Image (cartoon, rainbow, N blue to C red; front, side, top):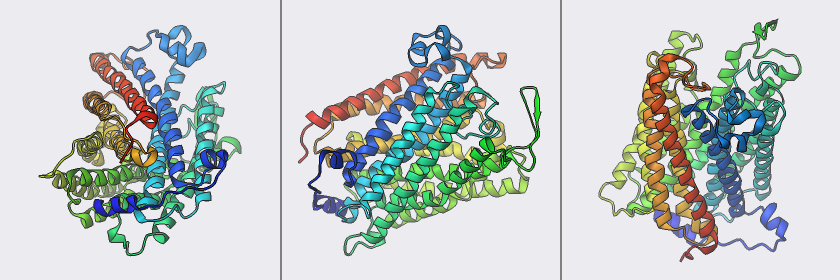
Length: 537
């Protein structure tokens, strides 16, 4: 399959339109240029900001309420008086970090880049079905990013209700500083983001359905294209539900409705609302929230499938089984959202149903992991940076997935829900796995974007520090979670019981700082290679 793909890519006509500077570099309709725009905006700009936020609040968690110059530099006197981080900005950093990394980096940055780059190349099309729609999708994403970043500078502070924005913190502006204008801008930003995602997804779907080259049936499609195609379908089904939730939340905030509000006691005052329920919002959010895991993961897995097959010098093991597993994961992802809500007073029978469907999803996931290992077995392996990151993805996909089996069981989940065990699980299985896929794709297809090769030596340094650092962060985090430490606490010393966990939190933060600095190696490698890298053959 990879040989067929490479031949199609090699014979793909380059697009040389007679364009002005504006139409070529800014309002471009060329799929490769739009892929570059997504990568620079989503991965570099938003990614750097998201990672920086995580390092700031990790420093606070390791050395709580201590003074640091870095806090004054990035947060200013208002949010870090005398260099001590304010609790309100801590919650805001956690909120915006999660939002940026999940949506802007791992959804738009990953899918927007590689779907635009690879779909036309690997199906033999000249470009996407609608270049204009593709351009509009990117600029809606750009506007969304700008609004999200603008929310960081409002007087009362950015949104601070967590990246899941549960009511009442997100529904009542008076509940906390971050519930005011910053929260409104968060909702507006996400409305633009969802519009961008829907336009992009529709374009990907139509392109795959209508523009495949002659003779390319569906079971001749590369697994990358299957992954992008199914991901787009999941997005079209699930993102409108989050959009409806955001619009209803705006109505609760601004027009006096009570879709998600009931009687509540806020700042010494009883507020009377009738008919609403915060749990309704959770249902709407997680109907997108769990498919979102696979909107992030499937493109990374598709990229990994291509790279492992190419650098093992073997066809992917069990091609049709891999396609079937993608389809099964896509279907099951839409009927498992309730496992995020086991502690909401859910009917035990319904909890058992969600437990069953959640554990079912382990079967197609295991098929993918087995087939990757079978492809690697006795292959002629080329352990370049792209291949190493792909193997790293298989590792974190398996280790993170194993803890998912624990969280999928309602009886077990209740004990570790909202602890750092959950944070460790989803960062490994979704965050790190998707980032590995993104890095693998960047190293592998960099010549397709810029006609030059990235430096392998720097790539090896980047991989090994990142791989060791990722497990150094999230492996001990499982133990902290099993000890009962809740996530999103401003300080881990709030209760004497957690004092013994302080050293582990310092260790986690040290690994986080090292891993964060390692990404500067990738940053330098990328931009240096863009201009001075060895020209590809």
